Length: 454
Ligand SMILES: NC(=O)c1ccc[n+]([C@@H]2O[C@H](COP(=O)([O-])OP(=O)(O)OC[C@H]3O[C@@H](n4cnc5c(N)ncnc54)[C@H](O)[C@@H]3O)[C@@H](O)[C@H]2O)c1
Image (cartoon, rainbow, N blue to C red):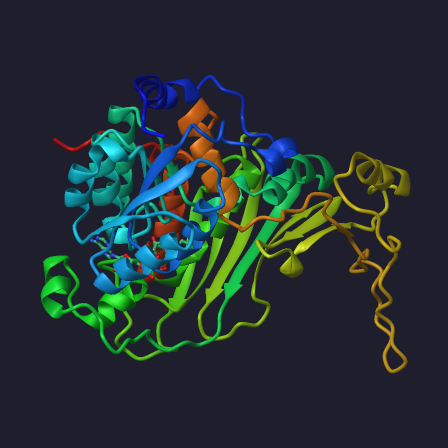
């Protein structure tokens, strides 16, 4: 169906309406529809690399979303995109230059998905917003704070929607945790821990990368940097920004405030010296709470050993939550077995509400073996119960659905630009702290988007 005037004006008003609409509820997350099927949203993508393919696998499953055009500076990716969408009955036009795509396809496109390397997010997003398009842009907003701030400013000026791709913000499992489990089951959460450990991997290389003249035209110094942009500060922010951006955002979500300081150390020598960015970072964030208390989060990202993989933990005086985007890696709430803590009856109430599933028995794990007896009275642990909410969709799908629901009928975005800006401030500062070997202290105003410099 082609765009009719009413729908166009509705889409234009969506950003304004968003502020007055109820928030996305976890209880309806699984069946969240994004509008009648004939109310088609026409989409373009900028960048068709690894992440765009992941997003596309969700885009083609969302009713009423039609991909019309793809831009990528690498011809190979354009060909791949054509074939991919053809398999789903979508005929797309491909472009090398995003401006040409936006100019030629202006009338055919309502929204754009930006999945280019971090350093291009601001340029691509702002151009699309100014062209009157709603934008879903991948995280990290940018590898430079000023560019992330500019994205927020342009979003405000244009009134268009800008969702940033911190997809856990729409994941019903995570929403359940931060709406129900953390505030109501854990007691005071003094401590959080998260890690993303990966094994040593060589630089990406391909036989036929784009020609150097194309790379030079678009600012990439050579094929190695183009393919491995995450490891060079011009284009990305290393593993801290790549992976930490997902998990530091969760600390902020859980505690409802941005951090007050970060102290980080980093190592760079697990790989060849050609990589600029830290391949491992360990850092401590402090969170000054509005009631005067202070909480701490420890984060580590390692690219030289995959031990333990990736997950997040929130440790309260009454219980702990362990969660990961892949539920097999983390999906449990564990009661603290302490005098004055939650009783069996208290715990049963959470099961009755469906927040956690019944377990084999909330029993103390025996830590005494035949050979050695250890006094575990204080460190004894309950077995834990699985979360009562699951998700049976691709990881990015609910976040895209939330974006299209906002485009169509004014649903509230789960990760609007100003929210993602807070986590960009927190994440980018970890590299600054590691570089300087100094604690980086935040002022509350650091998390507010500053006005454009004259
Ligand atoms: N949300 C997540 O879970 C998640 C996971 C992975 C990556 N990401 C994010 O997605 C983005 C892309 O990452 P990726 O892993 O797909 O990288 P990638 O290198 O695989 O793909 C990037 C693509 O962008 C294209 N490109 C580069 N500059 C361009 C330009 N000026 N115009 C048009 N196309 C251009 C490249 O040719 C390439 O095809 C990054 O911001 C990354 O942080 C998010």
